[in-house]
Length: 393
Image (cartoon, rainbow, N blue to C red; front, side):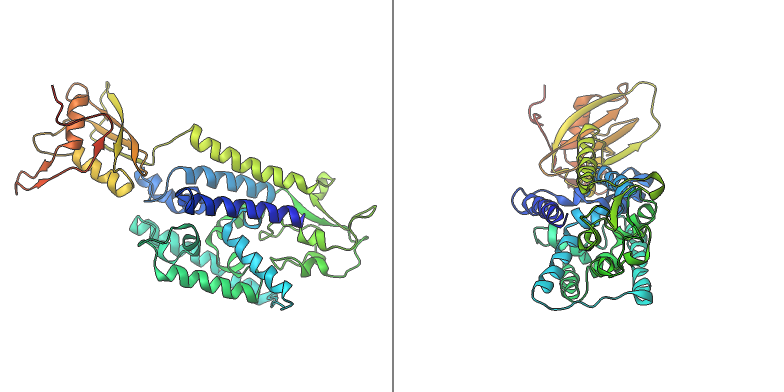
């Protein structure tokens, strides 16, 4: 299983790095923790935080289903930061340098830190309505293209994780990761688990020694710990496995009987991920929704592609131009649904056809706004695909 897991880890890490640095993709929109950060603002305002999209919610849903089935397998197979941290520990082992195994009370106390980190991130993100901890995010240091929006603190935190990962196994994942804090309640009731047959066990302790999460596998009949990442390293390390009767096996709870081959784990993991990605394309929910006035019985909707609607802030500016109070004012009901992103983005605008039409909507978007008090003109930077403001009948 070790080789299979390394291949899966490498595949997901390569996918992230190629997506960011070769294809120029915005991997933040595929981060499950982005769905956690954006949940409050989207529920409260109908808007996603800048750089995020509703795809974050679909991926978060896929990871939660995965966790209910496989415990924290996301951490052990898919998370790029977890993969790098674990590989650093493996590299140290190859060099013959022992890592400190922090267990017991110290481990349990440190593990509480991730809940404090999660609470702080959610509180200040909701308060500021932006990704306020982005500048400290070690994962962002990995998946960004290192432009002006990344701070030195992200590198400092990432560097600290690298150094500490050389000293003790996966410290960030065990003690400080806010996503781990989100997954733990679901992982606690995960369906699958490692099961130990006491009559076959020789009490060598190798299973516990090889567990990256420092779970005392040799003292349990079933591993139901929330921090289990389903890496199955304990099973690989057991000297009593591979015979007629295994000491350790993986599968459903003991009362349901039987064990499953490790291939089932990988199949479920890939299936949950694939379904989540496919669903995000099949059900393209807008990541920006804003409306004005009450909805009349009859409405009209025009769908267009507009350049420069790159984020939540630019979508708000678009609504500002539509909500104008000058000569190009659109009276009555107005609703904007947008999918912000690079280049031309889809925007659906709903209005009262008794008071406005498609032409007036397009003019409101592209014509300069003139303040009625100061008479200062503010030009529009938005361009509608296939529409020329100068070509008006």
